[in-house]
Picture 1 (cartoon, rainbow, N blue to C red):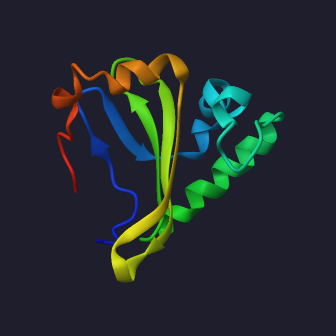
Picture 2 (cartoon, rainbow, N blue to C red):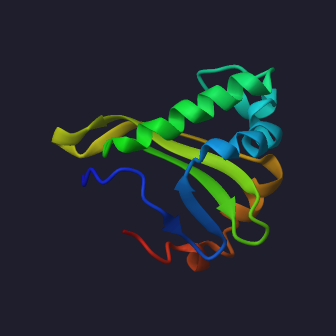
Picture 3 (tube, rainbow, N blue to C red):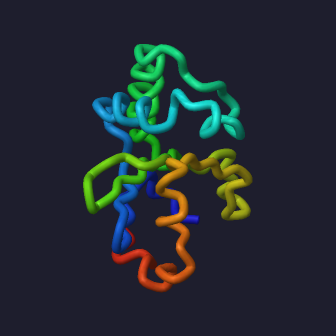
Length: 127
């Protein structure tokens, strides 16, 4: 496993990129406040946007580490943030992560996982 930190990953429809502090509003409005999205996360829905703003600010500070892997998923069609994905508990010695978490807006899940488009949505560029 190359410890290169969070690098952009681009597909035909999406850009996976680093979270920026100013992303907190869209992330909060699109998924962080909804129980249906946060149900399987180790945190409850966020009730106060100011709490989420601080959480996002802290995440964005972690990018200084080459062992931090946390992306926001941005739709290329409309630049909307439609989800996040991150890796945790990295084990460099055996080249694996035992935890991966993601959140995707329900209305976008089918579009992202459509079996008809899977072959067309392979990464266009990797670092």
